[in-house]
Image 1 (cartoon, rainbow, N blue to C red):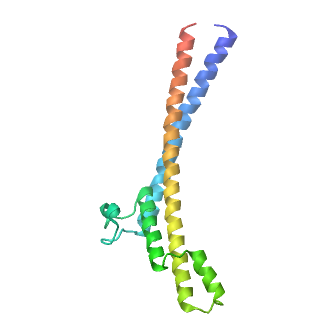
Image 2: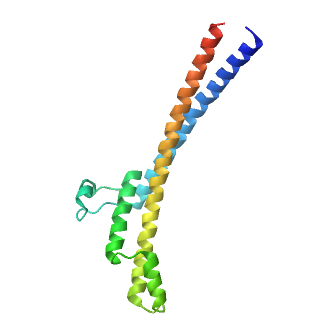
Image 3: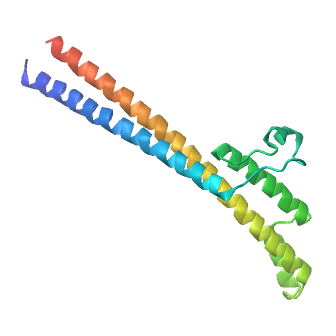
Length: 163
């Protein structure tokens, strides 16, 4: 076997071995992160209301929020509730009204607090959703690295045998 061919076999096999080792570690970290997200969501004891949800969300009634997609859906519910409570106005709009009123309007101050609290809760749930999506990516990339590593090892073996 020539030096070039031996080097190619060693590089393919070595790279494959590294990827075969890194892939499962990456996937395991993604799975662990997903479990941490679920633990955090479970600890928040967030549950969809038993009634009053739009028809397309009726399947969630009474269910606990434990996954990223459920967190995203509950954030949608909060967003709707905030808009209903504020007459369709955003936190920024209410803040501008309150500022224009000289910050003395108790009703606007209460609406501002409602909008702020709702938007913060909504943002936290959307962060959980985004983190969940990242864990999906990490788990998938871990699997892809593992398969790519196996393919490179197989290619290096076939390349070595062919010589």
